[in-house]
Each structure stands twice: as C-alpha cells, then as structure tokens.
Image 1: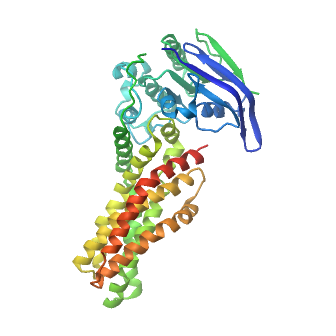
Image 2: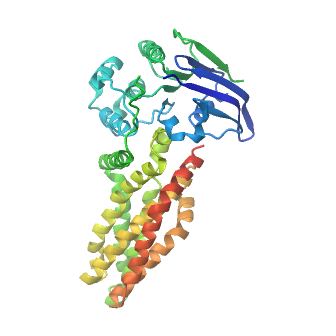
Image 3: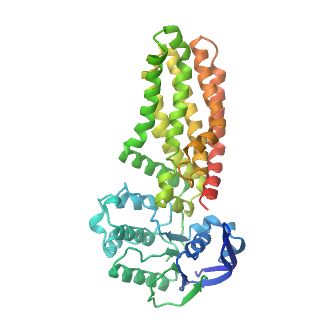
Length: 204
Length: 232
C-alpha cells in the first residue's frame, strides 16, 4: 500500500513573526522531502506542524488525502518523529526506554538484537542513558525509530552529534526505508547523499 | 513493511506502560517522592510544638492541620509531574503517539497518586498520634485522604499541564488549583472533625468519593487538552 503526505497552502505565524507563507509540498511512498533553510527559519516548526503539534494559520496537512486532524490516531500511528530532544529518559536503561515505546506503537518484526548490533549499541544495553554520550543517545533514538513499524519518518536534524560512520548509517537506513516504500521528511544542514527521489522545500 | 498487520497496542497497555515508566523513574530517584512526604511530616510534627501540649487544643486542630499539610505537600509534588517530560522531549513523543492522550495522562496521574497520595495515607496514622486521635478517627482520616488525594492528583494534573511551558510556574500552579482543591480539603477535614466528635461523618465521605469520581472522568481530558495547548 502506498501513502501520500501533502501540505497545502501552509502558513505559520509564531508571535509577530510569519515563519512561512503559502507553502505547499507533496510526498509519496519511496521519496524523501528535505527541508532547507538557515537556523531559526522554521524547519522544526514546520516539522511540528506536520506532526500535528502546532496549529497552522492557513492550510492543511493531508495524509492519504484526508486532513490529519480528522484522523489523528491513524496518522500518529503511521509516523515516528526523531526530534532534537530525543525523548528518552536519562535515568532508565536503553532496554527500559525502548520497552516503553513498544507499548505505544506498532512494532516491526525486526530482531531487536540485530538492530542494536547494527547501530553499535548492543554493548550499552545495561547502562542508564545519562551515562552515554550524546551520539550514543542519538543512536538509541534511531533504534526506537527502526523498531517501530511505521511508513512515515520525521527526522529533525538526524545527523546531530553523530560521527561520520553514524551519518553514513542514517543515510543507509533512510535509503532502505524508502526502498521498502516508506516516506521521510528530513530537516538537514549537511548535504544528504541518498539514492531516492528527493524533493526540496526551501523555507525563506 | 506490512500493512496488513498494523495494530496499535491496546489502551490498557499504554496506560500501564506510562504508569510503570513513571514508577520506575520514581524508584530510581526516590528524592522526588520523599521530599513532599518529608514536608508533610515536618508540618504535622512542628504544629504541636508550636501550639503547646494542651490535649484539647491538639484534638481540635488535628484534622485541619493534617489536611492542610496533605494539600500543600501534594501541590509541592505536582510541579514536577510533566516538567521532566517536557524538558527531555518525551512529552512531545507522548503527544505524537497513537495512543489517546487522556489515557496516557491517566497513567501518569496514577503513578503520581501511587507515589505521592498513597505514601501520605500510610504516614498519616503515625502523625495522627501526636494529635491524640483515637483509632476509629484515624481510619476515617485515612479514608478521606485516600479519596481526597485521588482528586488532588487528578485536578493537579490540569494545573501542571497548563503551567508546564512556564518556568517556575509553581506559584501559578497553586493559584490555579486551589479553587478546585479547596472543597476536597474542606470536606476531608470536616469529615474527620465530625468523626472525632462522634457525629455522622458519612456524608463527607460520599461527597469526597463523588468528587473523586467526577475528577476521574473529567480531569484526564482537561489535562490532555491543556498539554496540547501549552506545548504549541
């Protein structure tokens, strides 16, 4: 089954400032949307708006041609959001953190150990997150994303804190996800080398 | 990716998982649980020292003091209900989870009650001794505290959700919650005082129970809405 994410005529005003106006985009299964723009231009805000956490001044986000506010549960069940703040608990271990997520979202049938191995975090299973480095914590957040069975990935600056290998790994993972028919929205500063149809949205 | 089997885990598992996670966090940071409890114990033990050892006076002021201390210590613990989730981004993750937010909120409130209300109920008999409360009155007091703290946790979650985006919203939180929490305290303290006078106190208990049920059915929705607003 293919999916479609569209944004139509989006305007967002925060306080006195208009972040973007009449912005539109369309994204289909297997393709990638990259949000570009300088710091503070509203990439994260657009991402939050797509996730349904900010109300827009005008326009709607559609998932499979239905406005997302009319099908919040279905839409939220189809996405995973990797935000700047990872949303993981520093006092809990990796396994405890990911176990919590398991009770909220549909899980992919992926082998947990394999995912840990691939992300290079299998050694860290028993440690509390607080004691891990920022890059390692980000890898745990990536594991959460891989273990969920959802078509839409929202990645806000996914390369932050990652080493060169890690960045390459993220690109590989996104490529695989897209090849399997997934969709991905990414806010990124770096050049992204991903072998898939890419749409770019420039936020002024 | 398989589209045939996209089943979101059930409501109950979401509720249990949130409650379980918060209990686990409380277990790993016992200070957050012990501080309000310590405050409760301090107020209740300092009062008799200040008002003197007259038995009559202690018996008279006991129910009121215990209830005021219970209310204040619950308010103290409420501030942190959503704060750490807000700071580390887990609140955002809860908001975009496919589980209905009121259910997750209820899970968090349940954990809050288990770590603030329940310990309070169990500590209160020890403190009641300082006020020369007879055993029959102590059981009534525990009952009012059980019902009352349920309401306080639930109503407090609304205030905590509204003030989560503000830094140091404690004073505001107390102001917001006090009008809703006041009846709980009045009913509770009054029922205990009546029981101490060998009067009929059951009306107060029923009213507290009704208040708790009312909060249980309405507060999670209000809290969920408040969280969405304050997290915009």
